[in-house]
Structure formats: C-alpha cells, structure tokens
Length: 151
Image (cartoon, rainbow, N blue to C red; front, side, top):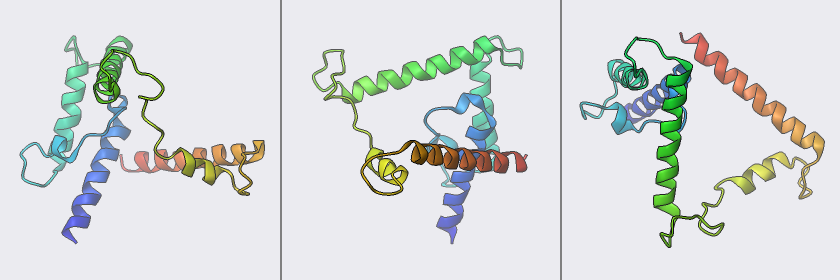
C-alpha cells in the first residue's frame, strides 16, 4: 500500500510539474530530483520548490516574470543539454558525428504501427491514421482537462 502511494505521488508530482510549467518540457524530474532531503518521500513543498527553482533559473533578469526571450533561452539551453547527452551516449566512434547506425532505434515504433493498423493488414490507411490522430487528440484533451480540474 505504501509503495502504491509513493508511486502515485511521484506520478502526480511529475504531472503537476510538467502540466503547470512550459519550462518543464523534456525529461521529467527523477524521484531523486524531487526528494531534496533524501528521506524517500516527496512532499508538496519539495514539488513547489522544484518548480520555483526552474522558474527562478529561467527568470534571468529577476523581475519575477518570464518573457518570451527568457523562455526561449531556457528551452534552448535544455535542448542543447539533450543534444550533448545524446552525442555522449550514442557517438560510438567519438568522431563528433552521429551516423544512421549510431542513432537510437525507436523503442515503440512497431507497437505503435500495430495499434494504428486497426485491420492488421500491414499498412495504415488514411482512415486509420485519422482515427489514431483523433483518439490521441481526445486523450490529450482529457489529460489537459484533468490538469486544470486540480488547480
């Protein structure tokens, strides 16, 4: 029961952070990122502190507001970090380039294809594509609605 509560709290924390801040795009925080005091529990105060820290870091002029430029800079910094990590992880021959063979393979591409290919004929029709897009749109709207209901 306790494990379920911790996992649920962690998932809710990640959703709260990513749903409430455009700055949280990209990798979600780890449990360790959120559990600042290292006691194995994430509190609402720790979640709030994490979100505030991200805001403060992006607010480069310290005026308590984020401008388009500050948000673009924060997003670009995060993108640069992701690209650097990708190269560190996948540039097997360390030549500063990623060949097609070095690029990570999509993890769930075949499963997604099978899900969209509703009739299982090995190809995706325009209708199957539209149905999948519509289903994802409805799922996204439900997710957004649940995020706003909690505020």
